[in-house]
Structure formats: structure tokens, C-alpha cells
Length: 240
Image (tube, rainbow, N blue to C red; front, side, top):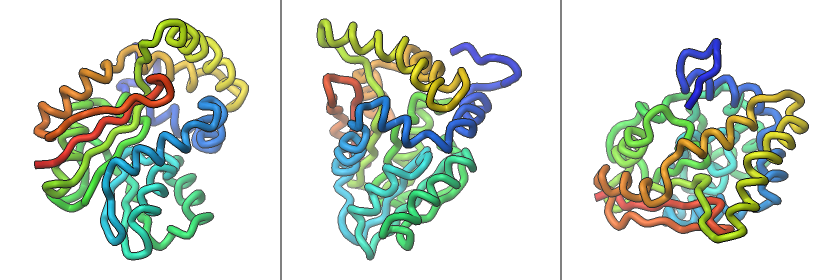
């Protein structure tokens, strides 16, 4: 991926992008996905198998929308931690959570996906939503998520994917490559952040390759589900 000046790394570039759009991120996600993002997150959360009273981790939690879904599953006796490296996204996350019944169950932590600040076998599950393509090291991120989950727990990734259905694929890529950057620019008031989105997907591995990465990091029963014609994929693996 081309990193524009003055940024020195992908991590620095991504941090700047998400800092700049945190205030409009949720609204734009819902608008650009035609309100399907809520269903995608709920489906992904369900794949964790998180039970009432359980403990979950949401890596690269952003504004906390998937974190909230985990807290809904964990119930009043459960606990969920949302981790992100971008303070402005975490501030928005805290604001979002304050409007829900789950504020007492959720804790936000600033940290890095490739070096999670938690001991081994801490959580019942770990999720990452729309962020695996943004991390500096995909394999390391999956490995870190698996490390902090107890044996038998799930690692779940919700991410944009590459649809293969004829005609639909062409229509989708036209929308994604041309209209999303335009609509994003109108939504945030400046160019850049939503031009990054199609570029980040071009460099991101196919969903079959991500499944293999799950297997190579030691996750059992690695599989994925394609949703909405393959626009997104939910990958699931079990910690052994």
C-alpha cells in the first residue's frame, strides 16, 4: 500500500485517518452499507458463543459498536473490554456506550492489536471488526487474539471481503471504488479517508487466505461465512 507523506508507516497513516473521521464514523458506516452493518456485527458477535457472565475482548474496537454487541451477549454479570490505538475513536466509543444499558460492563483500553496488554487465556472470545485489513501485521494480530483467549474460546473477524458473484461483483466494485470515496468525502467534508477504503481492500488477502492464516496460527475448525453476497466475511476459529 502507498503511504502518502508525511506519514512514515501504515500504522501512523491509519491512526491519522481514523482520528479525522471518528465523529462521523458510525453514521457513514450505516449509510454506506445501506444499514446492513448492524446485522453484520450482530451475526459476528453470535459466532463467538459468548455466554451470559462471560468475558470478551473486542480488538480495534473503534467506536464500540461490536463491543456493545458482545456486552449484550455477556449480560449484566459479564465483562467486555474494547481495545483501540486511536484515542478519538475510544472517546466516541465511550459516548456510544453511555447511551446503552451496558456502560457498567464495558471498559475501554488504549493499546495495539499486535501486542495485546493482557495475559494468556484471559478471555472467552476475541473479535475484530472491519480492522484486520488496517493492522500492520495480520498474522501477528490473529496470533495475539488467540493467545489471550482460553482454550475452547473463539476468535472472530468481521471484515470486508471480495465478492465473486457475476454482475453483482462488477456493480459492487463500481460502487466501492467510485461512489464510496465520493459519498465519504461529502460526509466528512474532505478527501482522503474514504479513498483509503477501496485501496485497503485491494491489498487485503482473499477470504480463503485469511482462513488459512487462522489455521496456521493454530486455530481449529477455521471457517468463514460470506454475508450480503460476499461484501463481508466473518471468519471463526477455535483456540486449542
